[in-house]
Length: 112
Image (cartoon, rainbow, N blue to C red; front, side):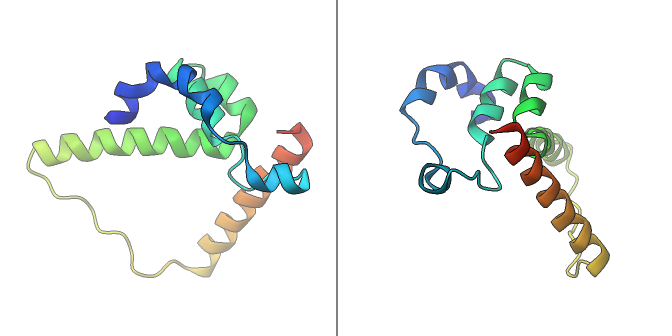
């Protein structure tokens, strides 16, 4: 909830945040480049602007905020949270790696 409450301050705080060190040193974006700018776009409810910056980070922020809201409602209603599986199959691992690499290629292509 603090992310939502502090979102109006984001535009004022953003210029004081450091740039991505990897991109500053190499010129290549890291896998999470654009996460801060994506969060700022989402704080203004500009989903399409956030998707243009980093599709994966947009989905991650929406999942973080949405999951927090669902977890809070479930806790208030007296339900427990579902257990995560202890083992992730190799197929899901390959899918996760492919999604992260596809997002990184988009970041390189878009010049993020």
